[in-house]
Each structure stands twice: as structure tokens, then as C-alpha cells.
Figure (cartoon, one colour):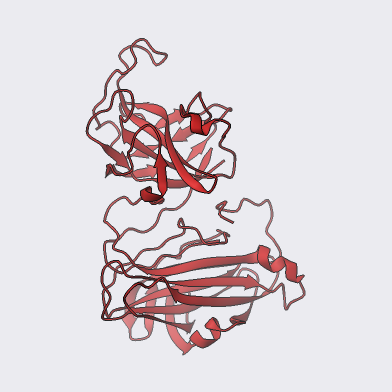
Length: 360
């Protein structure tokens, strides 16, 4: 069954910052902590107390160790041409041993028209109230990065400022990549362990983000089977896509509000069982996203039983392309629901946002 990943903060604006985390498999499930494990987290500014002093918001990305960074670990903030946005980058030692950790920064890239600049500063003060310190941008961009000793369970926070040039227009984009890399307690750990104990984020500015529910996979990158629902209007927020004990939850805000119809007379669901929605899964096959419906939801229904066989062809996914494919624990998939899209379409062409989950 899937385990829900956190969704991005959604704010409408022309400027945004996306923060991502490191193997695309998702949140690490470990029985015991590793000796050396850096964790990168990021927060927005809750309040500017005065020049050079801010109160931090909630830090995102705790206990997520994925590399390269995924779109799931994303923080989006508003901005405008000529403005400077402030973000707080936390390097946290999640290992059981004191460690030397390097923080490296790369960028900018992907800018189409506008000029962007970024500056990284050290900070002082408590976790929630940070004071801007010295400029460490050059060190962070260097080949060795910023090297620091961090005790087990402790953190160090950096102050990131990204500024868009006056020629910024909607659609311009730039990215800054951060990598926290363990050196294994003053270099005593084998160098081969470094790749296994690193964590990365991407800070990106650009692209206006719509208000309301947001897809966590770009529909333009998905091949939709049986119905072309990618362009349907998002009218429902899929607030819970978790699952456990053979039950998949698909709680969304339009449950019970889409037109329902008894599509299959005398089927196993029983007579006069009005159906209002289709459940969809999005999976990556041969490096590309594919989506197909796998079940029905009755009026107001937000829970669905899933057999031990999983979602397979042809029992659930009735598309020959999926022949031989099977969802497995640890697989990153997308889930969403639509108004009736197959057999007896509802005609209103509405859907929820696509949520990324780890199948468990």
C-alpha cells in the first residue's frame, strides 16, 4: 500500500522556490539509524523581525534522503521582478556519530531570459529566530563546499537569498542545487560511503503556480490510457492518498458531489449502486509516466480494498500495455480520481490533483 508523501506548499505568483530531496524511492524506511547520515531541510521566513533577523517557518524535508532530488520535496513561494526572497537551509546530522559534513551549492541554471543572483550566509541564534551572518557564497560554490563539524542530532542553518533581475517575466526559471555530503567523522569513514550518505535539494525560481490543488506530476509528461483526462479541470483536492492493511484511501473534497450513475446493472457491487468516480494510478515504465484507471468509487466513497495481487492487468488495469507490470513495495506512483471517465462518462470532465506516494 502507498505511503503518502508531503505535498508542496501552493501559492500563486510569478516567482517560486522549489526544494527537493534525494534515490527517488522516497522516504527511507530503516530499522536503525546509520552512523553517518546528513539530512537537508528548508524553511521559508515566517516574519522579518528587522534587517538581518527573521523568524523561521516550519522546516520541510525531515528524514527524507533522496538523491537526485525529486519534485516531491518542493516548496513554492511568491515573488516578483527585482525582489529578493529569503530561505533557510538546514544541514542536520541524522547519524548516530558526530560527523564532518560538506554543503555544496551549484547554480544558477535553466534561466531563459532574466538574470538571477543568489547569496548564502551563515546564521546565529535559536532554531526559530535566525540572524544573518557572514557571506559564505564563494565557499559554498567552491569545489570543496562548506565543511563543518556537526554533532549527532544537531544542526547548522544557512540563510539563502535569491534575487530576480528587473527583466524577470512569468516563465523565466533558474535553479540552485544544494548537496549535503557526509565525510564520515573527520574522514575516517571509507570514501565509498559518501555517495550513500548524501542528501540534495534544488532551489528553483520561476513559473507561475496556480492557487488550489497542484499536480505533483506534470500531466504533459504522462501518457493517459482509456481517457484523456490530463487536461481536465482540477476541482477536487486529494487530501489523503495513504493506504494500509489492504485499504487504499482516496479522500478528496468532491466526494459525493460528482454525478453518480448505476453503470453496471446486477454487477458484484449490487443493484442500484451509483458510481461517481474512477481511481487512477500513474506509473513509470521504461522511464516514462503512464496513467490508467484501476477501479470505481461509489457515491461518496473514499476507501477501496486492494487485493494481495496488487494492481495488475487485466484484473484492475484493463490496458494491454500494462501486461506483465505489477506495483511493488517501495515504488513511486501517482494517484488521483476523476469524475466517471470510462464506460459511462459523466460529461463534466473534472478530476483531483495527482498525488505522489510510495507504494508499501
